[in-house]
Length: 315
Image 1: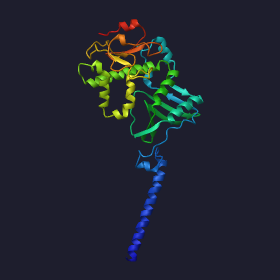
Image 2 (image 1 turned 90 degrees about the vertical axis):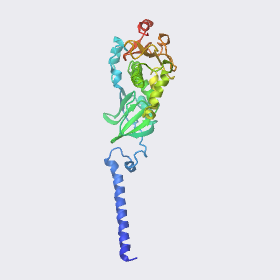
Image 3 (image 1 turned 180 degrees about the horizontal axis):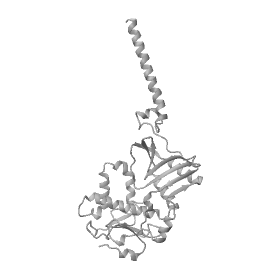
Image 4 (image 1 turned 90 degrees about the horizontal axis):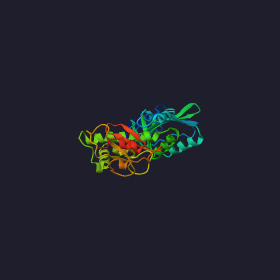
């Protein structure tokens, strides 16, 4: 081998080392300029490195902006006095007590990393959380159902914690009157929307004796079912009654062409594929006592007395 060949090999090695060094420097510096890239290799393997959950422990106050659907003015759900009481409440909850802040911080910290996403998915419920240190915002993220969505640059990191629902249900019910009643009405409206999609224009609703099974099969047939599986079970549940499988029943007399004011879905005790009439209705799912019914046109009413129940169209 000539000295020229050896020299060329030496130069090539030197060149390769220089290029490799430059790449390493770029990878180390890039995260400084590209927000959200906490580790250099995330440039090439974004799903490999799991980011930490938001840290709320140093916050001096936390603002929770609630689901805006809670502020719909619906006289069929609330009477005048109840609506006045609800609208006098703030559309956001401010946590300033250190115990309240630590309680939320613990729930957030116990969430497990689930996946990365370039676009958030809106589930049934959401809350916007902003943590402040004195007057300056320190961290902000969103919670949909059982999932926390934290923005990292141009993409989102998703964390999962089944405790999110129970925590926000508890904190909102303490601060905001009639919150669960309104969520219950949202559940019924969403069920009707999905029932109409499931029948695909047919002139009949799912068989009453298996309507829950039919809806479950419809949801399972959708491509996004794996991502939504954990949240779909709540569609069947009254927010006041977290335990159990399904707190709603269907009126077998109601058809898509039935009168607009005929009862389609209504609250009952826990069960599955329940169907029937006013004999199944329960007043015990809410406090103050009463229950929601959904009419064929999508209207939801809150029924407080047996007299109101009997005045509804069931056939």
